[in-house]
Image 1 (tube, helix red, strand yellow):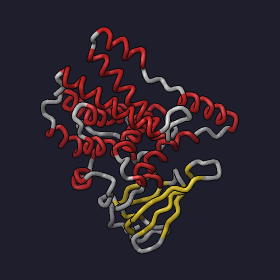
Image 2: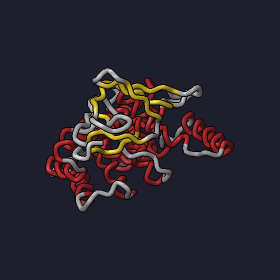
Image 3: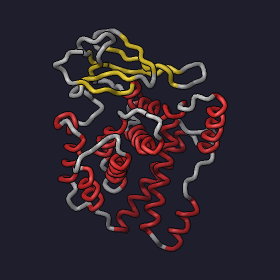
Image 4: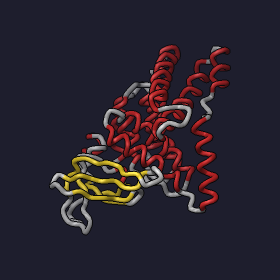
Length: 284
């Protein structure tokens, strides 16, 4: 790699069109024109194929770490590219939403310094992305904030991963009109599925995961109780949790009982219900 260039490491499945990828052996980075995913014989994402602007293709194993130019990432918002730090993104959002208590409180914690290995910082960034989507309908900035997490690989720590996974689910939905990009987020989200290396434990984990996918907890009793008692604040909290489950299910590819198209309709319905609750609660 050119020592005078600024590069950042990303999982292969997070490489997107428009980014400049460092080629095997180093040297000058080349722009990626398109990416596609190839599955193994069991249907799991195995290889990422990048088509480059010079006509070449590069094949990368899912989960492997590659390098892209830090200032050339198309998948990161112009705000992040121009200002170069997560704190800069958060600071601009704090300026954009001075009346939002949640944005202001969350931003004030993050602006003390963002450590992407800190579970609490990951939680705050995830919460900020959810707030922008649910409370303000700001899909562009919600994706920008989510993208601060989507480049982080699974490192075996499920406590931190759940916030990254949530951000990947949000990003996969918000980029659904760009198949390649949305698929890359989904592939990254599923990377933790194969974390268990013991065959017996892996088989058991897969069985449990499929059961959870087929019969997920979408908080029906809690929402019914909150609705019946007229507690709109509690209803909103439970519906936000339900939305997170639906987004995860969609990004994971649906299940035997819930297809992706059904999940997308349910997500749209949930966002509409949350919008109505925001109006009733006077959410700024």
